[in-house]
Image (cartoon, rainbow, N blue to C red; front, top):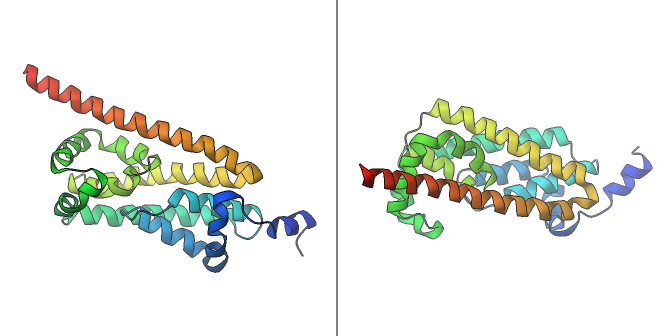
Length: 214
């Protein structure tokens, strides 16, 4: 029998936007977490961060195990990223050239991104996982850029571990305060995205100026 405090928590709905995932988690549990994160990591526009936080909140009420949530999230993220890499390696360039316009990836930008990836790919694979949009396409770009699979696997594993610990920990320990904290987390994510894009832009600009001076 559950303790009174845990039984009360188990009947309490998840707060805010996370409540929308409660039915999915109740019906599919760990499979829901794994499926969403697997799909997101090879390019599908799915709410990976939100469902991971929701699952961690659900685990906080005793209805899931936080260790299993984290393990499933980590393994699914790495597996999905590997699928994305294979897509890029086996023909992702034509795919990105055809559909990249929907995410503002033009052939010219893709050329620059590939060259940048060759030099700074390690940091893109790790830091880009925390940037919405970059997380969905970086594995495909890594495959297109011909980064070796072993190198990609090593650093996407590091990135997935850091990302999983951060968001699962946020949901599990924040409890009823998760909405307030997640707002700050969103601001941090936006700031990280801006800095990430600015960092890439600076390197591209610097390289272009260097070529002009040569």
